[in-house]
Length: 423
Image (cartoon, rainbow, N blue to C red):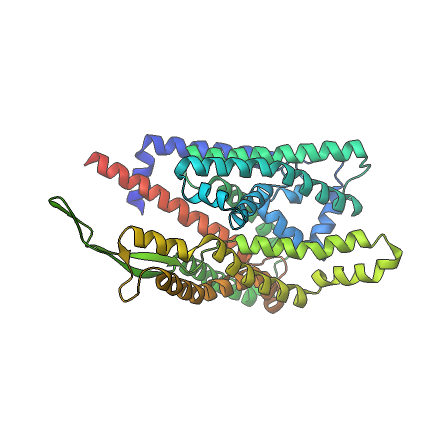
């Protein structure tokens, strides 16, 4: 580890990339502290600590902690992530988009990504309008006129577009995935504040709970690493082919099927669905005839048991759904057959596709249950340890560990490439 770190420091271009990434993340953190005009700071603090704080905390997580300040970047990279998800879902409906993304190479993927960027703008405007309207009704924004609403919508939409641009710059010229690193930076920036708040309320009687909390944290981190890196290796062999005086193929390799194919996308899906009852309830509360319905919809997210159960079930269902969208056993079977590859003991074609689908369904169950437990982990910790000032954010841990592992792999690949150049 220390040898790799020394090599990284000595590599001049890697140092420049690291400094470039840190500079862009510093710009993001600076923008996350600039609030939109007319914010009621005291009311904002009360809202985050109230009954709706759980949902707002998750939104704040994916905004890189910018929502907690109602900053100009309060939407974070959420609209861009949503646009990317919608575009991937549209590949199931429109074959042309699927061909563009999977079969046209780098040029096709660039066009596909450009459509995602264009879709980000209307989504940011729509999300900005909904969020500003909801927060204004909670008394967080004072004197929000029509002109002020439009101006704030344009400001936070511009902030989201700037973040999307910074994320793509990091991906293109830096190290790691830019969008993931932006969310990672927002999570890490919260650690000093959370530790200070916990220290202010610490008592000697809480020592056993703190020890249990640290033990659970270590187990959760180990579980995140295990599931995130876990995969099922399906053996694949290639038939020998003779062309002229040369022989090709005749090798054996494997097809890796990951336990967690979907990442944190199912959690984002589930969160979006869970937001609808409270938002609809807030709108219906203004109609006297629908007050009872509005109270029922609002109570769905305020009841921790119902909220946790729905959250877990939705994450499991969306894990299977998104895995089915992004992983096509039929296409993989077809590509293997075209390249002369086969799974030993399995006939090529539809039989191979059915075999891959059966394996994927089984291993996805473990990944889906794991993601569901990660999503409701803060509720479980608060219920058993009774510590509200210090909780394990399972989603935050999943993102942090995934980003660290992904970035470490990219750095290692860069170092290995330089070893070959030196040799």
